[in-house]
Length: 76
Image 1 (cartoon, rainbow, N blue to C red):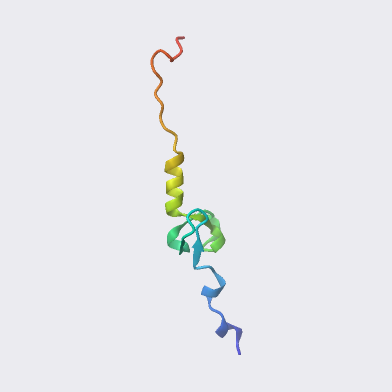
Image 2 (tube, rainbow, N blue to C red):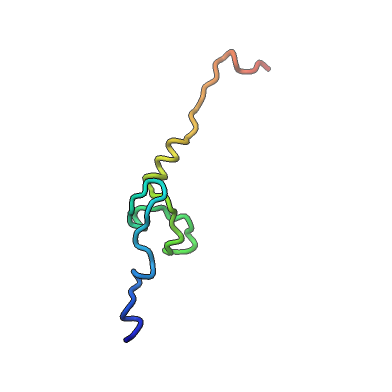
């Protein structure tokens, strides 16, 4: 028996990953952002938070533009 016959590249690399935030299993390449571009297509190059959860987190924590009233602005 040859080792090459027993293993496929799909067995060595993760094809799916479970999101840490929502817990849904999604495809690695389409569902997660590539965070380390210099490593190629390795599974360790992708984030552990899916694209949808990342977008929700950024929108939720985005800073709101606060306008100061005229009387609070310092008079120099």
